[in-house]
Length: 92
Length: 386
Ligand SMILES: Cc1ncc(COP(=O)(O)O)c(C=O)c1O
Image (cartoon, rainbow over all chains, first blue to last red; front, side, top):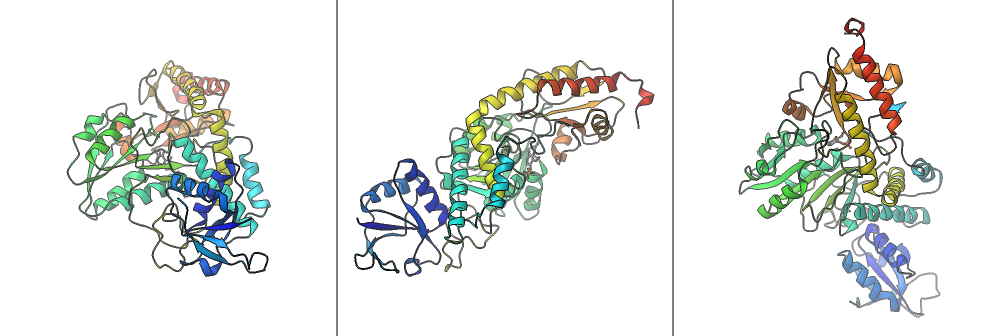
C-alpha cells in the first residue's frame, strides 16, 4: 500500500480536516510533520492512503485550506525507523 | 438557591459539562497545537470538535473562522481594536455594554470617529437610526443582539443588510443571545460575532469566542506562539492561529464542547420557547405587583430572558439582598456594566434589579420569586430597610 503525507500549516487545520474525513469513514493518522519537511517551523500532517488524497484535497477546499505539500512515503524507508517522503503533486 | 442571574453567567450547567472539565484535568490532555504526543493530539481533536459544533450553531460556513477567547469582552476587544484605525468612523448603539463602549471611547481618544445610534424608551434601535449615521469612512458598526439590561432584541438582520450594503463591517455582541436566540451569521450579514461560552452556551467561565467572516481583515492586538510557522517572525495569516496566541483554556473548551453538544441536541428553539414562557410569566406577575416599575419592551414583544425592574421605596441593591435573604434568590442589582444603556433608559441614578431565568429554571421558581417580591411590596413601608 502506498502512503502519502499531507502537510498543514497548523494542527488546527489538520485536526479539522481529520474530523471531516473520519465522518466519511476515511482513516487518516494525525502526526507531527518530520522536521525536514517543516519548511516554516512546526507543522502537522495527515498520513493517508494514496487513493484517499483526492478526498483530503476536497475537504481542504471546503475549509479554504491550502496544504503545504503532499509527500509520498518512499519504498526504501517504509519499514525503517526514519520515515522519508518524496514531494509529489497535490491531486486536486 | 433560586438562580436568576443567567445573564451574568449561566447555572446550572447541563449534565456532562462538569464531568468533561474534570476529565480534561484528570486524564492526559496536552497542549493542542504544540506537540504530537497522543495527549496533545487528543486535545487538538476535542478543540476541533468544539469549533465544528459552534460553527453549526451559528451557521458559520468554516469552523476555522471560530477563534477561542477568554470571554465576550476579549472577543469584542480583538474585533474592535482589530478593525479600527485613526480616521475610521464607527457606530454603536445607545444600549451597549461597557465591553463595547469603553474600547470605542478609548479609540475615539486616538482619532477614531464615533457615533451612537439612538434607542427608544424600550431600548430598541430603529435600523434607520443606524442608516442615517453612515459615512463614507464608516468601517465598523457594533450592535448588541440583545440587551443585558432590558432583554430588548435588536433588528440584527435588517441592520446587517444596511451595513453590508454600505461596505462596512458588522460586529454583533451576542453575549445575551448565543445559545438562547437563533443566530445565522450568513443570513444576518454578520462579519464578526463575539460570544461568551459561559452564558447561554452553558459552558464554563473563562470561555468565549470570535467568529471572523471570510475575507475580513483584522489588525492584530496580540501576537505570540501559535505552534505554527514557528520560524516566521510574523503572525500566521490564517485563522484561527492568527488570533489564538498562547495556550488555550482546554479544560474550559472541553466543558464548552459538552454544553454545545447538549444545546445542538435540545435545539436553540426549545431553549427559546422555555425561556420565553418564564420571561412572560415573570413580566405578567411583576406587572400585577403594586409599586413595581418594569423596563424594556412590552410583555408581548419578543425579548431575551432578561427582566429589569424597581420596587417603590426600595433601593435596587437592598431589594436584591432581601430577595436572597428571604428565599435564596440570586439576582443582579445596579448598572450591569452598562452605564450607557442605563442613561438611555433614564435609570443611571437608581439602577435596576435584574432577573434572568435560564434553560433549567422552572415555572415554580418564578412563582416563588414573584411571591417574594409581592410579599415585600405589600409590607408596610417602614419595615423596609433604607
Ligand atoms: C451585552 C453584553 N456584552 C458583553 C458582556 C461581557 O461578557 P463577558 O463577561 O463574557 O466578557 C456582557 C456580560 O454580561 C453583556 O451582557
